[in-house]
Every structure is written in structure tokens, then in C-alpha cells.
Image (cartoon, rainbow, N blue to C red; front, side, top):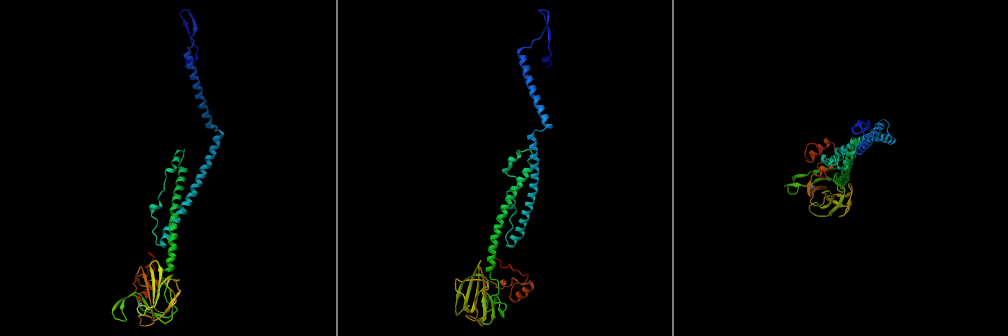
Length: 333
Ligand SMILES: [Zn+2]
């Protein structure tokens, strides 16, 4: 290249004179092009070098914005952490308390964790220079949003179950049909016994509670009267209450009937009075509970507020299975 910048001379053999070497037209063009590119390259290098040490006002603004954004993302990450732990607490309370109390299965982990992790929606974030922080926030928000949806569904489920459970508890026959204040005694328990009329061993489908004629007999749970009839045989004057959830209670040998078929009754409402009607050997109430058309021991339902010791004493008298008291032995399920 140096020969482009230095003048050259040569000896002309024809004139025998030292003459200056003239550049051809092509050489001149080449010279011009090289110079132009050289200058451009120099200008670019200088600008880069300059910007490195002296950023432009726009760059300064961007830098500031960047710093603010980074700090915002850091704050967001901390706040998300807070939300995540609150959600986790709610989820644990849901599984261990709400659902457990209502005998609902915990939400399976596979469903709880469904749809977590980075999805296709944030692949565009991979194009930015340092995606870690933004991606992290974005993924966590997505995960939280999914889990909130799942949690919300679970709580709707818990709410429905609680309402149903509340109705169930109100309807389930669960008190003594005769007030404990009235003097009574259990004359026949549930199960096989000698029939007082035939002396044969027969199944007794309820319990017999003897007492004074005219004692109030109370509905043992909310429900609808489905039978209120008089018969000279069997249970004599008899009231049947349908409690829903598969439960029916029967009150037999009544003296008076105070309700009509189709009437709604609340727990504790008087349905009639103790008597000696029908196939009876003395004034008593025959009380029977059926669950899904099968008779069950009504004593299961009386004693939900007893201590285990009180239960054991009564269980022995009432021919109930020994062992630990299981108030939920006759649950909704
Ligand atoms: Zn009986």
C-alpha cells in the first residue's frame, strides 16, 4: 500500500530523462475505494470506543430503567414467595383440616401440581439478554394462578360438602326420643330376644323404652312424616319420619299421634305420646331407626355427646359392640 502514497520516478529510456510514474485510472479508483472503507471503519471504531466511555443520553436512560426494573423484579420475587407460602398454608389447611373433617379425600398431588413449570406461553422471554429473573417471575405467577384455580375448586367442593353435612347432621336421628328429664328405662334392646308373646327367639328391630303413658315423644331428627296410622296389631299407633340420607325413624305403641302425613318436623318436635297401643305388654315406646331400609341399633345415635366411659357403661346395657366409642360409626357415607 505504501507505493500508493509515495511518488515514484523512473528513467525513461527513450527520452533519457527521469520522469514521475503516473498512476493508471484503475489504480486511482482502487485507491479511492480503499480510502473510503478505511475511513468508515475508523469512524465506527472511534464511535464504539467513545460510547464505551461516554454513553449517550438514551443509553443512560436505558441503564437507569434497567436498574429500576431489576429491583422491581427482585421485589416481585419476594412478594411471590410470600403468596406461595400463604397458598401452601391454605392448601395444607384444606387437605388436613377442611377435607379431613368432612371425610373428603385430599386433592391428589398429581392434580395439585398440574400445569406447573414453564410453558409455551413464555418462550418469547428466552429472547431477552438475561431472561432468568423475568422467566422466574413469569413461571411462578403461572404456577400460582393454576394452583389458585385448583384450590378454589377444592373449596367449592368443601363448601358443598359442609352444607350437605350440616343438613345431614340436622336430619340424622341423634337424640333420645324421650326427654332424659322424664323417668324411663330400657326394657328391651336391639337384637335377638325372646318374644314376650310367643316366647320364641326373634329379632327385635328397635329398642323399647318403658315409661308413663302420655310422655312426649320427640322426633329425633329433622324430616317429613311419612306414616301416622293406627293399627290394632304390630306397632299400634305409629309414626314414621323420613329424615333423608337414607334414614327413617319409627315411633310405635303411641297413645296419641300429634302429626299428619306430609308434615315437616324439626328435631325435638313432639310427634305423639307414649302409650300401650298395638301388640304391647305394657306402656312403652318402640323406637326403631332404619338406614337404607335396614334396621340399625338406635343406640348408635343417642350418645354422641357421651364420654368413652359413659358410652361403655351404656353400650354394655344396650347390647352394643364394646371397644372404643365411634360416634361416626353411622356416618353419612
Ligand atoms: Zn319394640
